[in-house]
Image (tube, rainbow over all chains, first blue to last red):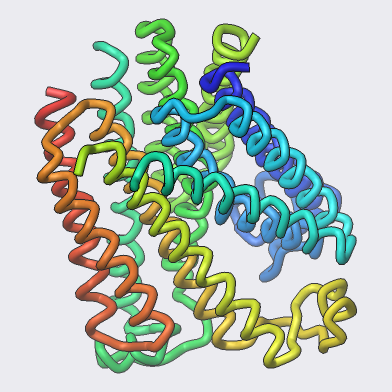
Length: 140
Length: 140
Length: 140
């Protein structure tokens, strides 16, 4: 697959994955009927609480971890595409990173360790490999 | 308007909108004199507290929601521009998304429901429409 | 330096800087043995607590501030590169922004004020200068 289609696919898949967390959060709020915002408690006829339900809080941590990793990966991937580097290596980075981030969300939501730490680390190493290639081929 | 100028305008407007939240937070901290960081309490001659003032906390939630939506929208929009897809559809996506995110900040800060949920949902649907178009025209 | 290499260098340096915060957090969790997630407390044979250690919480605030500033800076910088604007001005924006964000992390982790507020403000002003240039040369 060429660079731009692969890049587009990766961005779309990862955004669908992130948006799926919003569904976990919404379901958690409605099923418990607990809302931290008074206007939401009123709208959904629930109870105003000071802390989110555990599953909502956990989903929030998953998303936060995504925000620390996915936008910067996609920005670096955009630089890779603009520089026109190897399409084969790019497909490898993208497919592994997508798989690891999906596995990270699954293992984080379901509290599965040490799998979560392992898939997180592989995802981070893939991003670093792409960064090193960018440094060598684009910067120096 | 061509693709790149429209894209540039959208990114600049959304960044100005996000930066405006920082002003709400700063004003909230100074007007209450409450700071969670001891070095800030000392610098601004305020009181060290363990929790931010309600308006500062609310502004923080608005910004968090922005971070979950705006960078990924702009990254997808960048792919759209790089692929050179329809400028008319792009202007529609950008203008509606900008309007919905500005309305989202306004309704969130002022606790206006169900308007907040409605404008959030329209913004998310616009992003999904752009993603579907990218999937069809760039990936497949 | 040309636009794309300068852009690539900035993205890589800022991602390394953000990733360094993860090391501060990891070291903070392991040295205190305090974990907010029960599966992590079990894996690392630590204690489950309801609140992160102060240094971990502080590192989290640093990263949150990075997320509010770095991805959007890089997205705007990508637009600047795509538009092919002045390479000299771009190198100035990138070098100053990188230096200010590194100094921001250092002063935030070590609670040094008013230096933290000063370097944050200079970084924000640099981003705004780049935005104004983009508005003038790309949008209008």
